[in-house]
Each structure stands twice: as C-alpha cells, then as structure tokens.
Length: 421
Image (cartoon, rainbow, N blue to C red; front, side, top):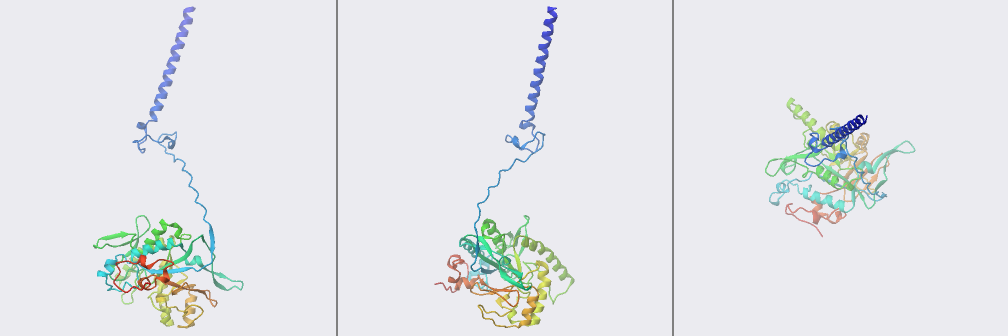
C-alpha cells in the first residue's frame, strides 16, 4: 500500500512538471509573434514598432487617436464704418528685363503695368498696413424695400479689429501683349489641382510656375497670410473677350469661320473651363470689362448692345453670371464725374439696357474711394485707384496709406521722370 501511494505521488509530480513546460512554451511562442521579425511586411522594421497602433488581430493597423487641434484664439470682430478702398492692376510683368530692354519702353508697358517684384512688395505693404481683402458682394447687396422695389445697400462688414477692407480687381488677363515672353502665356491647372501659369523662361525653355502671375501670387500670399482675406475672398477679374480668356483663344472672329478655327476654339474652351472652375471655387469672381474693351461713354446704343451680347455669348457663358460692370478705360456709361455731379454722355436708353441685363455694381477709375448708390435704379457706382507705372511715378503721396512707391519701385523700369516730393 505504501509503495502504491508513493507511485501515485510521483506520477502527479511528473504531470505537474509537464504542464509547466507546456505553458512556458506557449508564452515563449506569443512573445516571438510580437517581435519585429514577425511583423507584417507593411510595417517599417528598421525601428521597434509602436504597438499602440497595432490591434490584437495580426496585420491590422489602427490609427492612433490624434492629439486635439488647439483652439485658435478668438478674433474680436468689429463693424467697419469707414471707406472701402479699391485698387486695380493689370497682369504683372514676369520678366522686366525682356519688357524693358536696356531700360527702354518700346512696347509702352511702363505706363499701365507693375512688375512681379513690385506686386509682391505691394501685397506685403498692404498686409503690413492692416488691410484685408473683401469681395464686392461682401460690401454691397440688392434687397427689396418696404414698397416692393429693388435697391442696393452697403452691408455691415464685421472685420477683425485693426483691419481695413480693400477690394482688389484685375483687368484684361489675356496675355496678348508684346513682347509676348515678358509675360507668362496662360493659366493652367497643375498636378495638385491648383492654378499655375505656363510660359517660357528667359532662355526660351518651358516654364510652369506660380511665381510670375497676379492670380497665383495673390493665392500664395493668402495661403501664407490667411488674415489677409475676409471669408476666403480673392480678387475680381474684369474680363474682356477680344483676346480670349486667361491665355486661351476662346473668341470668335468675324473674318474667320473655317472648320479648323471652330474646332480649335472648342478645344481652347475645353482647356480653360477647369481653370475657371477652380478660380470660382477659391473665391475669385468675375466682372464684365466689355467684350472689345470699348469706351461705353463714347459708344452708340447699338455698339453697346452688340458688345454686351458678344460678351455674354463668349465670356459670360464660360465664367458664369455676374452683376459687376467694370468700365473699360474708366468710361462710365452713366456719365458720372464724381461727387453729386452727373453728366449724361450717352443717353438713358443705353443705361437702361445695361441695367436690364442685371448689372448692379459699376466701377470706373478715380483718385479717391468715391461711391454712390443710385436712387433711380438698384445700382452702386464706385471708383477704383489704378496701380501702374503712371501712379508709381507721379502719385506717391496719394498711395502712401497703401504702400510707398519709393520702396516698391522696380529699378529695372525704364529711365524716365519720377515726380516724388
């Protein structure tokens, strides 16, 4: 009996030892599975993996919980009751050494353009001086009064404290001027889905860049300084149709009506559409600048009608509906001369025709931020201040609240008179 009892105890000890060995083996196997050598192929095994991003199921990646985004400090918004400034530009000169050979001006670009360097410095100065871009539709809107009549009114702009509103508009972005290679050639959509510009460099090599055109420079500046834009506002594009749109030959030609011409025009329209769509998506907006860049104040009613119809067919059909008319050459159709003085140069029929087309905001050119809301029709009249070679050379004092011409003036501009006090 004693022998049997001892034998049973020995068998129990052997069984217990076997269980311990088995359990230890399982633990060793589990530890081996979690080592880098057993990691799935898509893990970087050069370093010990962060197991906080690995679930219990082998080969499944779980995104770690991101750190909460810091809440930006609140911005104190105040109602702006002062003037709304309005500056306008043309397309910028990409290569002033080509535009102004030996500092001469054979193509008369000095009067009406600014260079890339000048444009960059002006934007920096505007931002530094507390300006913030607003869209024209942010400032004025149409409403129905208590009598059921349509009127225009100025909206209450709620802006960050110590910021002043400014409208920027850009005329004739068509890339048709000579010398052709002093400018980029057209706007395009880049691989990143954003607007770029295409042209050639100084050596004639293909160039795609965001450094040499007004739209792309302003877009980049706002990306780097988001406080320079109110609610994502960009600039207004005052578009003609005579030389196409944004570098694309979308215009008709009454002297050419061949199948080849029509097919090429359709291709150009297809190419410019994505650019227009992206501009619309990113806060840019459009204005009529007339189809043929004509002076409305020196045109007959028939000429105004023909031009307006052609603009709607060839430009408006692509860029979309607009209620903004920016007068070419500053020639007001209504004949306003500023202040309360009105001179009817063309006649009420032409004014009525344009009003009936749905235009509500009308901009000309002047030395001050003149604005007048018309009482006879729902329309607001305003002036824009030109930023170009003429004002850089001759109107330094008038623009000091925006920038100092002496600080932004490009030394590559042609030799010529400069009237600075």
